[in-house]
Length: 347
Image (cartoon, rainbow, N blue to C red; front, side, top):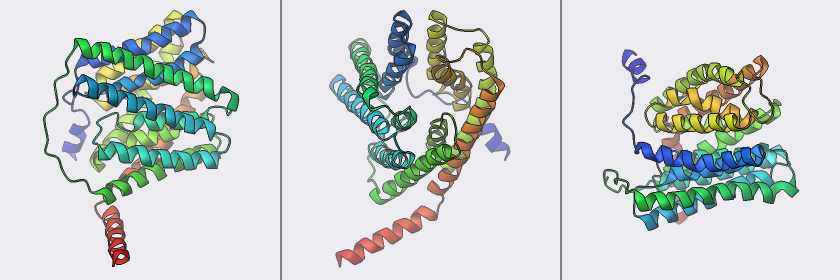
């Protein structure tokens, strides 16, 4: 137990150079500052989300990097579009979220895509499902996210010409257990989709917080990692709400609002590779600024309680999903049954 408690405070060795966070921040700052200049902050925030694709830049040759970012950009735009066009019905949106999460999670597991892995794809799908449905605004919203992706791809190309990222340590290629990967992705998709449906059915104001928290928790590579991320997320959110309260009390607007978003994003990207809990402390006010900042300059007590409840609900559902995903017997039993059924059918 003492060892488990100590593990909550361990700082991890960074998996990427610090200047990747700086470049990602520059990409996100461009639409944020343009949004202030043209007084279009709501649209700028959508473009900012698209710029997150630069976080998927691999440590490979320049052609492979650009192809990878182009494919990830397509995936992000496709997920967001699916969410937007199915937001007219919560049950249809939930099914689409389940399917999109399963597919994206399987691809990320099969190709061993490192963090943030499936997170931003799930985030964009959930965000699209929960935005007010308006078919006429779909092209505009999709275009803004696509523009953000294009900005990041351009910056990543310039960055790649200037900096060569050191390749990660080579590991032996292991044969993939396709059935196990499918089952894990199915559990991920079902729990993320169910968390969204539960949030909608109980009438939460911004239900995307619940599936996003659920996906973040279930990203753990083991059950130990899952419960650690749950503790980090809940504790970090509580501390982050206090920081958000202080930030919102400053009545940010215009350039100060954009600057706060840019600084918080850089801090998050620097910390997240060292300690997830510390990063969540700053992720919380960042997401509050992105989601609430354009409509309200005062962080009311009811809003704090609501957001804590949303994240706690998503974390609990994600914890249950992570327990099932990493249980030593549940998925193994299902895998054996599927393989036995496959053998029977082939005979």
